[in-house]
View 1 (cartoon, each protein chain N blue to C red):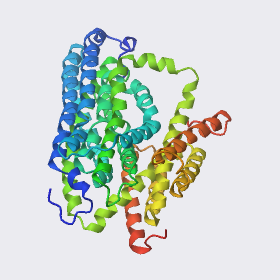
View 2: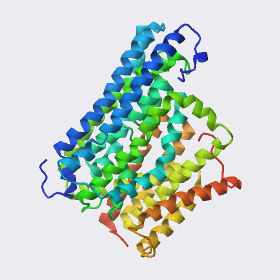
View 3: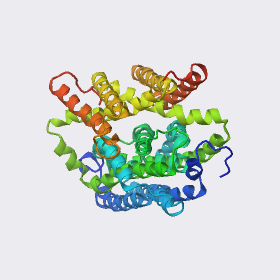
View 4: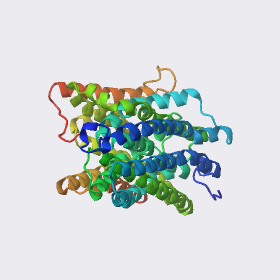
Length: 246
Length: 246
């Protein structure tokens, strides 16, 4: 599907693909993704203008720093890692619409199989573009209808279940994702858990009170960067290694 | 929207008509991009020698393959709907997002005010901070894919200097550190939350193991959704039987 590489194609379709299709996709891909950046602020702007709710700048900054510390590396690693499979059009579409590994990649692969084109050719890239576009139509519609219906269901539930949904789904997700990553690196998982538990205890016990503001950011930074540093040290000393299929 | 004996006041704002309206433009951009790319791929694909039948087959396969995973995403969306409301959930999961990013981002937002997702009394300001955090955090992927995609081939080559083996270790360590922090917060909240964390983690481990051994993709797609449901049931069961020991 990395059909941007002209050598990968074997027939005369290459010129159309490289000289017409790819430049068009690059132009419109950049325009639409940047437009989406601007429009994704819609709910935040409505909260500000209609409901007159603006959080303090420090709160937003501190939360954003914590998010960037955790996910910042993925902003770069994910597009670069998925690019060979997604190709140029697929990269724009998949990072705009999300759900890449569980939805976009399987759709693209299945479509190439059924249309009988080779992965890695420009024909393969065209078919994956068609398939990913189709999958975007399906999941946006399904999620939209589903979200609307689920909100009504949620509001009609008895209070015990509404509280339960709010309280117990989130911990299960946290536990599941932790297990998913911890599976490959059980020692790192142990280190992270001990660090986070120690820091949370210090925070709750008021031992971080000497720091300015609400010192939650210290707990997050120590948990994230402490785990990274120790994992790096363990890796350099051969105590852990990356799984075959990372 | 009408809400009697509302569990959380902020959810009335979160599920209001204004919020639904504010999410429409960005979701429309996602659909617009998909249709622009689809049209161009269709006409350039024909010029490259792909048959109408191949293109149609690619489209149809994209639609069919998207349905299963999209329903799986819908189940995962429940946790978001229960905590940040329908419109923002829909938007975040149709643009960039995945449950694994949006929930922690929202948690980091509300935690700036000492709340945790699922608390009854989350203030509107804390909710707005969660929205800002999810929005700002998600722009990283969009900006990098908007500007980086044409240069992706060069970027990949630059990274291949022996250090690329460390990348999965570091990114997994960042995730483990952050989720360890989220976990300890839930464990500190009480016995039912702890049970839900443990159930979510154990179910995930079992399902991923089965999926690996038998190489079944759909089990992977349903793993997070199943872990959430089991975690919810365990949390409710503990709440109504033993309550909380701490």
